[in-house]
Length: 355
Image (cartoon, rainbow, N blue to C red; front, top):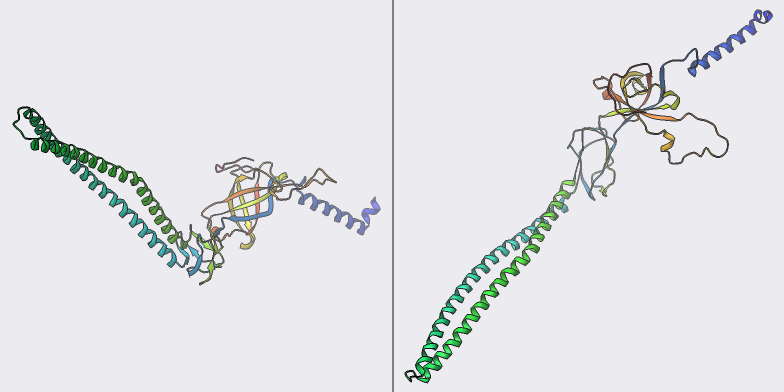
């Protein structure tokens, strides 16, 4: 053993082996190099990327933005030729006005029918008065006929007048019933006319919506991506014109399951961004994924067959970025980051969710 230690070559090999063991222990955070700081470079900046698409088909009449331009909510991104939709709106409005005129005419007809009922009712009263007079003349002629005071001609005339008065009352009463039936008919068709007006109003509103939808605007503040729309291009409903990336960003860090012990929502986090030259930003753990990444994969592995090799699974962890940092505006979805969390640190902000 002493000869081995005196040999420089053997001593170099021993030192090299000791360094290798130390490096291995340090890399795997094994004693005596165990640390409370957990690190992962399997982390990325995430954000909402909204695909901007038209709801209508047509030719692009205007493209109002350029690649990567900042926009505010409501700013025009593109406009589809609206001439056809404007004419459809005018047609729907004309149909609605016609239906409203028909409905208004129905109310006027009802008033006329009510007036006709009043006139017919008055004629019934007049006919009944005539009938009472004719009945009185007939009764008097019948009484005088026994005495021979009235002639047969007068009696026949009174009989005729009585029959004529009775027919007049029947005719007047029938006229009242006809007028009432006309009012009933008008009221019966009123509901159909009102439904037609409501349908025409809905058609106008739909035409107005289509006309407004020819203007494709930004749903919120952010930056547009690469603009694919071209002036004069025919686009279909749902086709992608561009994308919108809002300013709201966060970090998704995929920790190994062996690193999760001691991590809690609300703990402070420090992460460096590759694209910013390793500059550090701060954040806090928000919540953990309810399952490992393998559970969300389309094709799941079957560990029940063949040889099994245990592989540490990863759990996605959402990390919020603290506001007010100078570099926050330079973060973009997709950037790679390196996340560091001290498991001994206390939570300093309330955070929902548990592992």
